[in-house]
Image: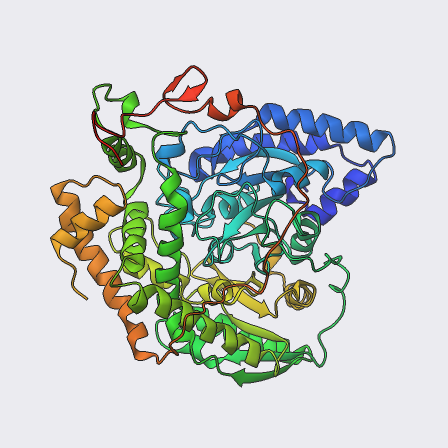
Length: 489
Length: 99
């Protein structure tokens, strides 16, 4: 068995017992990256020197008998929209191509304190806008299970890197499904915690009422271990909740007898691939056999969640992205055109040259829905319907503990298949956006294959019920062996 | 919902993004198809009223304590145009113009 076949849990046990060193483990991952990257293109930056340095520090600490964290000496990667000192933070955009992280994001600082070895920064759709990672200004990441397919997005680099054994785990960010959808496409575990569970300080903002950072891992237990390290209130992000952080591994081993599981009927209408549905139905049957009580439930506003999302997200993004103005940092037209005369042209030409099509589209839609005359019809209406979607969840969670759905309507689609059709691309988020609209936690777990491509099963829970969410997901996962399958590249 | 070329140009101006003629044509079609999709929200009856609640959290305050931050020099080090420790921008007001 290769060291890079170990899960996070296994690797950390081996490090703790001093059977392996962090330097050995890190070198194996750096070798894997060197071999695999030409085919997968998951990384935008490889921080080899930082990695070797941290690995040596971790080994010193372990030698001194100061082993104090399950993440100590574990090689990992960050999505390139998170700031980490000593690395760039491009957000996959030309406008931030040369941008150096000015400070550590809270998640980077927390991982650093836990002794994580940072291998590098992963590819993403520009400013996390997209579902295939094809909107990156720099490169196309490939799906490790089939190099002609997309890895999903926007955290496609993180999911592909985990699936291709290029890191033990990675962090992604999830605004409408961006950790869960790529995790489903790449056959790994992707978690979106409750809104407010993990600090976004130092995460390049997309839509601030929806954004949340979450781990992408090989197993649910690994996800719990990473969440333990990154969750918690942060003075630098005032949306973080005061609710205490639990040990999210604590309940994993408990069985699910008597647990009430709801299957929202609105997630099984039209558009869903037959093989995907077959896998999901089989998983539901299995949960029932494991002792859960399963029943159909209804979330009547599901059909509107995606439309709500595509009004609220662009509105918030148009405001968040106004900071890229060619003045304070990032690409500026004045670097290419010294004769440019007025300030307006500096703004509009820097943004024209620095931003990609999807970003321009969403900024303009945001400007549209916020502009006078359309504000009531679009933005206010969307916010009101958002409350209805939230109420749907609040009501259904009085009847059941957990919801189970497909993560995506199909398996990974082909590279280039949807780039010219933004609306069809948006529809691949149809099952994931509701959790962001409602602010609830959700996780995608592998539940089989269709034509050699992984299928993802989504679990959703009440706000701050991550412990229960991960328990069910872990129990399901351990009753199967899908998580043991690895992509052959 | 149809959107005209002039509206697209107006949006681009609001968003401070210069568009080519080809881009105006392309974005007109794409934005129209997205607006068509989100128009399904018209079918939902929503209550009128001012309040929009996004989160239950409000007024997170901290003590007013002076702390060391990143230096000015470092903070502006990535600005494309600088002069005398400040960020340089193009003229905002024209000669003899007042606000």
